[in-house]
Length: 590
Ligand code: ADP
Ligand code: MG
Image (cartoon, rainbow, N blue to C red; front, side):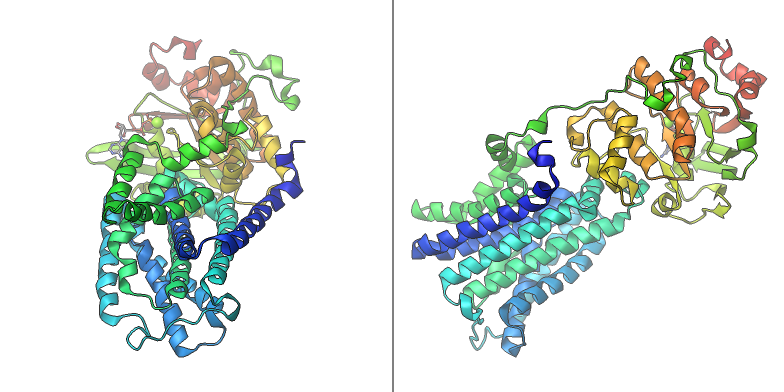
């Protein structure tokens, strides 16, 4: 087993890195020339703030231009508690400042539930400007009478305080590392790529965005609190909107969702102005330098962090890992020979007599004057497979969107088991056991295959469960990065993850798109096994009629939004309306 896969290694190496970092900090705090100690604290403070930005912008993909306002909140709380001589001392004040900043982060994040991109940027920058004006007015507690902030007794001089800041950075880095690897981290990366994909996985989009804002702001608050302890008399001029903007640019260009790059960002934050000073250039040019590099990162896509990282951390798993969906799974080997283009799925009448898992009654979806779904009614028996076919534009994807809660304003009723789904969000429906995949790629490339499967499954999974379902669908290993697999393979991973979520009903919107004909057949063999193996009912939307005929005992045909026929495959394919609609598709009739 490779070292990187061993359990003890996986759980201990982040701590080892943190301890090593603290060790380096201890050496630096003793060895740095006095002048640089203060700068070094500034770099650590900036690194923590950038670490926070890495979450909200780098991972969750939202533009937040008020990171130093969150820092100001942290600094303000520390100042206040210092003036009050609150019990616990600096470290406790620092943590309370982080909590306060986190709460403010949630409030600032609320607009993010409705706004995106530039609009969100404007709101956060506006907030930063308003907070700046307020801060200049009210000042930091104790600043008027010059009450300087009391550092902890053990860390009272600058060298000791630098060491303390390194310890705080190490703790923050560890916390971010484990958060990023956990459910929240997955939800941040998912929401950055696709809000619909996130909701369809049963994850609340609102919770994903607000946790990103809260954690990011809390880190900002810690940075601010540390800065307050560093300067001991904080002023509003340390937290201006312009500096927040510069910090954002720095986070973008350093690729701050990577912890090491956040630290690099922190170093640049003090290094660039310092160099300009030495060269006798006005320090405001620092903003210009950051601006140019930021524009480069935003437009050219080459960010400094990734470039540096590629230089030092050449990773073996960068190589692509695509599906190997050729061999049939072991339990299907018996009827492997039966999976040919002439196989026809047959109806198991006993199974069909149970309670339907899905009942659709009079479903109607209107886009302007177009009725994309027109009085659609049919039932899907539990643990069965229903094929949903029809020409392009027939309304199949619209049907899936309506059933899964993405088109709440439809007419008619949808029942899962006996439960009316009216008014339930996509997230709720997913949690009730109605899952769907998408015709477009909605699998977040920032995750590994394993992290994605865990995220979608929403339940505790042993590594062996994950490996088993991945192997069943011929997917790459759990360690592979989704960014390194092709789109067809990503769709297979999407199917595998949704299957292991153990839903009652799984709707697959063209799962075989992007796969070769041989892979179609192999996929068909696996899909046929799913109801027995995982107790799931399937609705499969597919153009490949070979696949449909070999997999789906039941068929529903849509045409211009209307159901032409629904029922056992043989009956549906013999229906004169279907025959007429499919004229020319002679292979269907053969
Ligand atoms: P299918 O998946 O069967 O190819 P769709 O459900 O994607 O068909 O589309 C059905 C019809 O509804 C098409 O005519 C399409 O142009 C239209 N349509 C789909 N989505 C929208 C939308 N958001 N707004 C307006 N028209 C739409
Ligand atoms: Mg479609």
